[in-house]
Image (cartoon, rainbow, N blue to C red):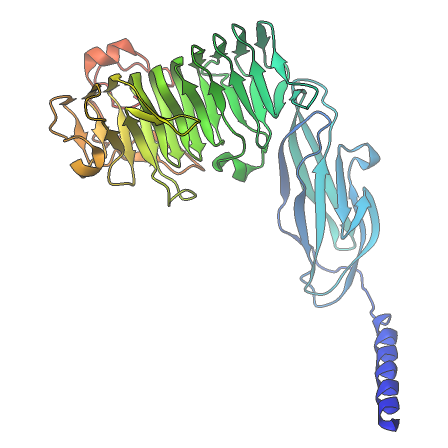
Length: 468
């Protein structure tokens, strides 16, 4: 018993000694400059009255002593659009911030601005003042005014009259936005459409989606997370679902970052001068549809850039269809997949004739053995033409057709197209001057699409793909 009492007394005495020593730490004024994890924080694009993601700046004390930073503050003070949290405390002005030797502290940054127009720049500084001098970290963001379309149990989120969207406000969609039957939605140049997680658009039977971008003012459709890493990640939103007898006209558009891009069933689609990339399943998923595309650039789709099911009628002219991905390396990653069959929502298999799949003056390439994969159902029509194309093709058994087929005309197999940069962070699918695609296009075919995706003439010595 005495031993236990002695042990307990020793424990409490030791605890008291440690507690007393805790307050004996002394903090000195900084004598060296602080070090930061970043000298500028880009908060990407934020929307009117919508709080941004939280960003982090780490502040390092490289000195061999504990210091007190006399002042840390937002340069614009309480009027700043930004808010900061310094080592767990929110505010905009902090005095005598302690920082242990060889240690760091966190500053969290966010912005929830009031938009003053279609698009503006929000800038401020976190200022660090001490005897060692004044330092700062710049805060920078693009602020957009926005219009919200929010589906709730009491709001089905419908477009019920012919409607035009312009670029005065970004469009933010929560849940599904549905275009009613026989209604047209026109999206004008420069408009930005953002989809929240698990959100999408539905185009009903008889309805039309007309996307009218220009080369200088493209229409953007993407997820609503604007931090840089989400530019190269899929599954940030769902898809644009187009019902039977709906119509799509898409020009100068960038569509990226979802599960499926264009999900079409018996749809009539015309696509020009557009980029479709970074989808977890398909960039274009077409069931029994008619698709005419030219100057189309695609990349980074988990199952296939283009999936053609239950036949249909398809034409792709001067397309660059690549499929390279680090994030989806375990998936099929075809360039084009085409079949006569399709499983409907009830799990039943439906069949349809592939009346035509025309691929002209195009590149279809990837890091897989075959970039084109056909699965013909015996007895079903399956017509295709591959003319003046550069194709990744290694084995007949996997591709589903022999490269010496009568409908494979003047085409090149397995020669690296030499893209400038096919990785998503850069994604420059122009080809180098030494590319085997240079000057290999059919002049008559090029005459049907006389200018490339950046408006360069290709009427002489046409290069395969979307870029001259």
